[in-house]
Length: 482
Image 1 (tube, one colour):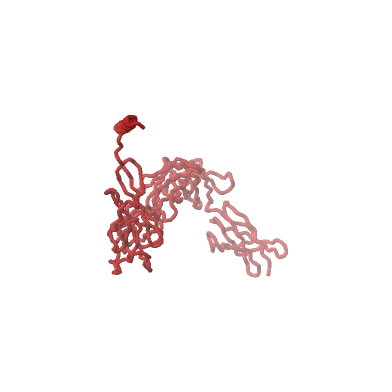
Image 2: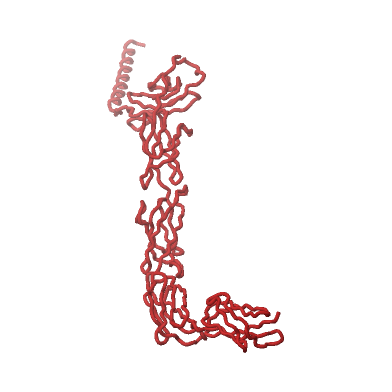
């Protein structure tokens, strides 16, 4: 090729290369620059591998990204006499104890506390220092256990301290509620508490030195329920709209109305123990009861407490007084009718000319009434006053008598003279009469249940039971010769 043509070709190639370089340079000048992300955190995790631990380090960067930097990190152990760590994060136990393993990347560090147990046979690889390391440092965990809602110190609580699911220490609170757990290495534990009557609890505890940690449990609670009834001797039926309220203790002020199914009240969330409860309603007396709920492992179980309340309304007792002759015997005026028992004791009145009486404004309940009148036996009656109550009274004259004839029934019915008729039991016991020539006898001043015997020497005797209520009772006795 001619020399001139060769020079022209070289110039063309150089110009083309120059243009390509300018284009490349121009493109580079206009590309935006991005600042490189920097490490902000390092997180260390561990995976057991036999008697060793393989640790990993993950770095978190300023742009939100993360990356495994296990190989790039610098590893170190706080106590190489307990555990050593390789440049790849492999931890080897040298002696029993705890050490802090640290990974550093771009001047940012992360660490993990490890408790290790040295193997009985040294692992393969570089031998650790044959000289024994110092004993593992141990600590004490202690404190006071209290319970809500009374904030009382609780004795007899069983406490277990666990690590890895295994109990490593145990204690029971003393009479002051104090506990002590000793011989603990620095690590995190799960502490369990339990006692009858209290909610069992577990809490996480980090021991990094001798530690004071007070604990709290909660008393189990019950649902207090029941009915409020009309007090005996009245109907005893449930009363609706009665207010039941706790008066003292941690749950003072909690209340309920008897407006639920079956006229029940219900107060939930009541701590067990001893406290006072009141039931009240207009028209009834207030009933205060001291309730003792025993400790139980049942949380919010039922506890039954019923109330009886007496009516405060006042009522009347009324009726008529008659003799005990017939159903419509004569009415008796001037009879004293008196209440002898209960809150109305001493209240009295006199029957009028029609034999009628009335006692007003009497408290409700059981009443005992006595009616007295000269010439009559006292009459005592009991009744329940729950509303205006009629009570008719019958009185027996003291002159009430038993009379009749004693017969000889050996060969017919011939009047028997000289037979003895005697009261052997009951009112007037010992009173006796002798039949006359017509066989007639008469016993007076009788009342109530009596046993009367007719007898005569040489004859069989006859006993008869009577209930004397009429002014005159008749009975004939029959005796046979022996």
